[in-house]
Amino acid sequence: FGGEGAAGEADENDDSGGGGAGRGAPGGQGGGSGEDAAEPPGAAGGQPNGAETLVPLYGGCGGGGGSGKAHGGGGGGAIQLSAGGRLSLGGQIAVPGGGGGGGDRFRSGGGGGSGGAVLLEAPVVEISGRVVANGGGGGSGASWPCCVGSAGEGGRASLTQAAAGGPGYTNGGAGGAGGVAREAAGGDGVPAQNAGGGGGSVGRIRINTLELQGAAATSPAASMGDQLDGW
Image 1: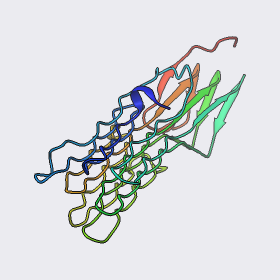
Image 2 (image 1 turned 45 degrees about the vertical axis):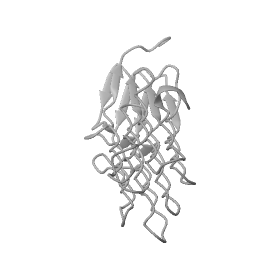
Image 3 (image 1 turned 90 degrees about the vertical axis):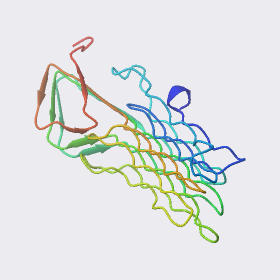
Image 4 (image 1 turned 180 degrees about the vertical axis):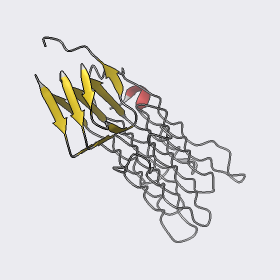
């Protein structure tokens, strides 16, 4: 998916990091590069996009690539579950964003992908499991003079633990953390000669119901509605 959620790509003429993708919150900015590790600035993170109602329904957005071959993480998928009576979820639904790739030699890391989208609709919705749409971590920049950077983690199936960005090395900046319920936006990549990519934001979760039962554990927090057309 492109548009507002799409993150900026790193400039091939410098080694600033790729931006993290946005969906339910802003994506993290890629780390800056240059001699002072701040100029030029890294690529911008993607912006929040799409309606809380998840109409139309689409998944997460991809992170921006690094300055070399480091790819941006893919966006999470989109799931809709609807029932005419009772919808019970006892397991787990996860639509995580992918981690950004580590920078190849002398290059920056890619940005993480944003979490996807989950739409649940029924007169009665019971959630005793969990529903998560967390963002992926940004990749780290390459370590001079020999080693490629590390990829960021994919979004975790957790309510509290964010996906880690790739760890930093000598002259290689760490990637930003992915978004999770307690910190919905993606973390910024760390400035360095070979900068880290930004983390991807959380996605979106929507529950349309007349009665919500159970713990309803979600990351990020779900938006609620009671519009059940035809029921």
